Image 1 (tube, protein in one colour):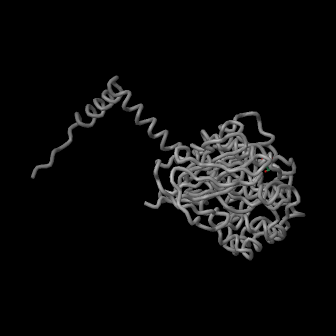
Image 2 (cartoon, helix red, strand yellow; image 1 turned 135 degrees about the horizontal axis):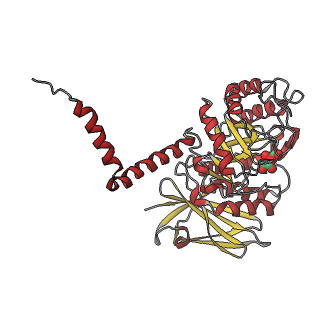
Length: 411
Ligand code: GLA
């Protein structure tokens, strides 16, 4: 068989023709489309770290210890997460918040653990936490200082800091927004995203810009979760208002990227037991990060009862990853609902008022086909109710309390 030989004409005329074809008008839109596709792929891969398939679970030092955190507390917390059984339930991230570093970088420009409070260094702490089967999280800021102003931020030091974190074995970065240069978070945060992607270690990226620029609308390309609110405080009003602000963005939550109404206050003493049950129930159905904010080494029995409720945790960690919404409210009485895997529906009936009252969830409000017959599992009583339900379910609910059910179709 004879091979076709290429002539000079093939080498010059064919590429020229191709060039003209590509840039002639009928093809311009197609080539633009291709470019935007490439851009889209690039944007999506900005944070291809494979983390956050379900909301993150663990502990963070800030709500209880503020700037009083030190390496002993972190080690003891890691020990306590394991000994209490909380680690087995999924609480695996041990996250150090603000105030862990020296105010000045090293001569090489690196962050370094505070010599008084973290004398063994962060690498040793990471090794210890890993030896317990847990993961270590750390905190920095897209500004010149962190919010405490006691340590530097990572602005203009993103690459060296991301590399340092990866070298230490850090698994999680919470990235705050204080003392920045006035530019938008949408400009500053992706710089750290890229730096983390280059650092060679999958690091969960938690954006903390307090909801200022509606991060739900852009966060999925940049981080694994994004704060939708300012800081929570340990009281009922603050807690329910965080849940409300976060609910607005429900449609943006998905596996890989979650709305974050801030960390848990359960066990810190500012709310009643029932109020903390509402806190955990709403965070669970909102697919919020479950980051314990109390002193796990000295955890009370009733706090454990809430944080270790396996059935409520499973709702939060359901693989479908759909955030529940407040589907109806009348005055102080609210119905939150969302779909779960296996054609199940989770509902939370919340009474924000001063007196015990019945609350009714109508199938039409929770998007169950009318006439569907369901069995109802009470997740706080750990009991499946003996009767089945059709078209609606009513439950008496105490003041500042809730009922939480999973509804499973019978037929
Ligand atoms: C900000 C954050 C908090 C906490 C503090 C630390 O206020 O929103 O969650 O990290 O900074 O200084």
